[in-house]
Amino acid sequence: MTNQPEILHYAVSVVGKDRTGIVAGIAEVLFRLGCNLADSSCTMLAGEFAMILIVSHPRPFSKTRLHDELKPVCDSLGMSLAVRTLHADEITRLETQGEICVISVYGADQPGIVFRVTRELATQGVNIMDLNTRLIGSHDAPVYVMMLEAAIPDGQTPEGLEGLLGNLRQELNVEIGVRVVTPVSL
Image 1 (cartoon, rainbow, N blue to C red):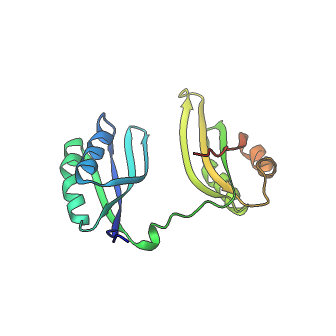
Image 2 (cartoon, rainbow, N blue to C red; image 1 turned 60 degrees about the horizontal axis):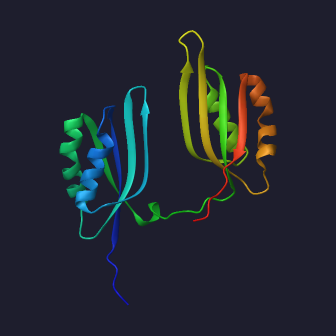
Image 3 (cartoon, one colour; image 1 turned 180 degrees about the vertical axis):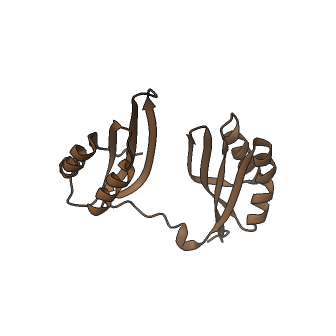
């Protein structure tokens, strides 16, 4: 029986004006340090780029070293950086309960779409795992698009959830669709 080294976990957040090479620059530092990139989310929002990463590294290692190695790259790219040590209870990977669905919302841009839809989903026990919004269309006719990845509770069906969102669809004058994400076996 071999003794496995303790693994340390960190949340790394990088935010700033979008430009080419941000992901590559950060990934290069993590690779050079021997970090494992466990989870990541990166997106561009109105010309700003944001990424949050969950990285791990065997002990001995420190948050200070991770920050100090990433800082020059972030500075050269004009990005802000935050690094936080994750505790054991923050890194436990929880299996998602319920069926995974994609919920799409399309309609004329107006205040309250995100609030109203997410409040209704919370009322129905739906767990939102990812949410993205975009404003598309023309300046004169903007269209709001929201895509959510969510887990619906046991006993609920995508069709049933779509039906429960019917009143909200009418009140907001938007299209709302719910479809199952088919799991893939590896």
